[in-house]
Image (tube, rainbow, N blue to C red; front, side, top):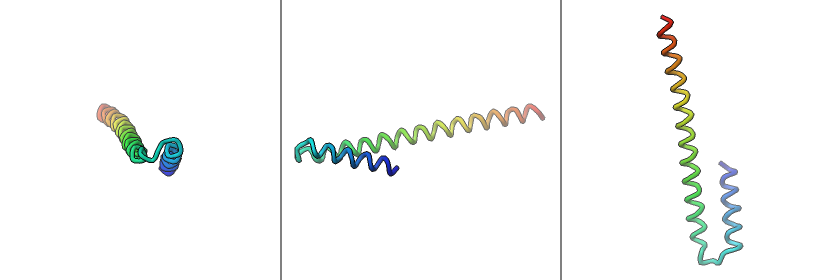
Length: 68
């Protein structure tokens, strides 16, 4: 997470150096959208990993039931 904050602060600095002050709020809007999308992507990846673990556990339980 610290690397994400560092990247966003660098991006904000770079954008301020090249754009007029009137677009300053757009920088924050872009940074906010970027953070939200990255969090959403992380959450989706987390759900995917959980689902794979649950599927493996279900398969193991099915095999254990058949062995009885």
